[in-house]
Length: 85
Image (cartoon, rainbow, N blue to C red; front, side, top):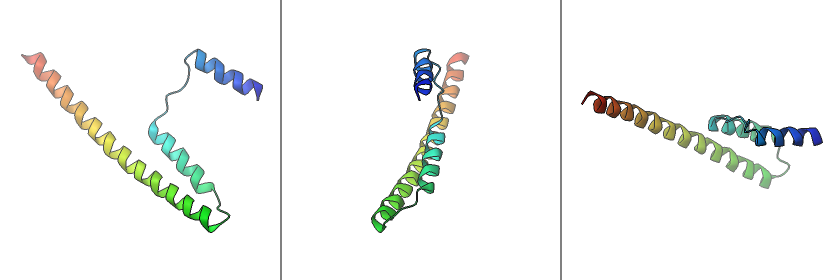
């Protein structure tokens, strides 16, 4: 455990932390939630709600990513037009 914490500290101090894609975070969260086995009806309902929230987040992230891509394309066009003048 101590070496694990030392490695995390070293990576943080040396700025070697890997930047992960938010989609990867959502996917790993979904995988974890899928593996949980509820022990009661209450837990089952909470788990179902968590799954719905993850699905909603994935949809919203996909829409945001499409908007970012569109805006980046528009920016490129504007920069090209500015460069031509």
